[in-house]
Image (cartoon, rainbow, N blue to C red):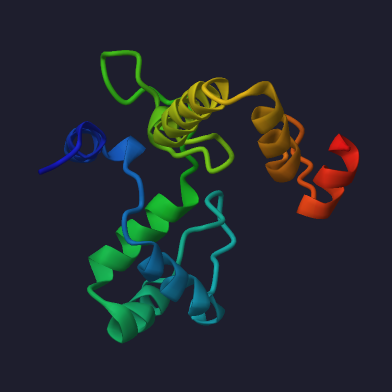
Amino acid sequence: METLATSDINIIDNENSDTTMPTNIPEIESISDNNKDIEYLRTDDPVQLYYKDISKIAHRLTKEDKVKRVLRIAKEPVSLEAPISEDDNSLGDFIEDKKAEKPLDVAVYADLKKSMSKALNSLSPKEERVLRMRFGLGTNEDNTLELVGLRLY
């Protein structure tokens, strides 16, 4: 079952070669590793390659036209703000933000906090205080049982 993002990217890949994203990064890396064998022509297009050099790399790796395509894709930057559908979606909308909290984690944490609060409210004030001090609930500073006992008495 394909996700919406996957199908959107496939549609773009099939319709518009200008915004094609490299889907085979290992091939690009493999070709880049072989860049020592590539000689660049001194022309208006500095990335134009000698045919013989492309053939040499292609012979080692894969079909020649695939090498040309991968090299073309690898050199063409694509903006994360580039629109990829008529729904005002951009490429950046489908790339995961590793620093952002995951929605499921946020929901689970909120539910846990609510359940914890409900459980603590069912205790006597002294019991609640002991548990809060012992496990650092609300302060993020837990204490040993000995220290909790000394502070309470």
